[in-house]
Image (cartoon, rainbow, N blue to C red; front, side):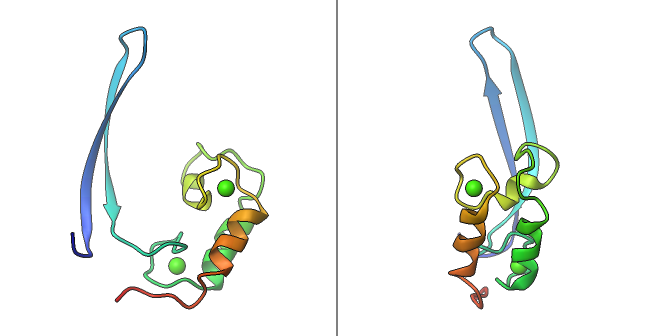
Length: 89
Ligand SMILES: [Ca+2]
Ligand SMILES: [Ca+2]
């Protein structure tokens, strides 16, 4: 897959037979680029800092949980810090 924007559809079901499908736009970006501007820089760190301790499921907060542990914390900041100055090819 090359870089660009994609529409992704996800269907989720539960044990009670409930089911929902959501479609969203996804971009092929680099790790640590939480604001999807194709650069890992201080703006990504600020994005995460501003969401410390907030619910990962609210709004666009999920983007700040870069290590996927379900929390927005210093660990996410460190993850992005270690990728500073990376950019899309
Ligand atoms: Ca960025
Ligand atoms: Ca995290």
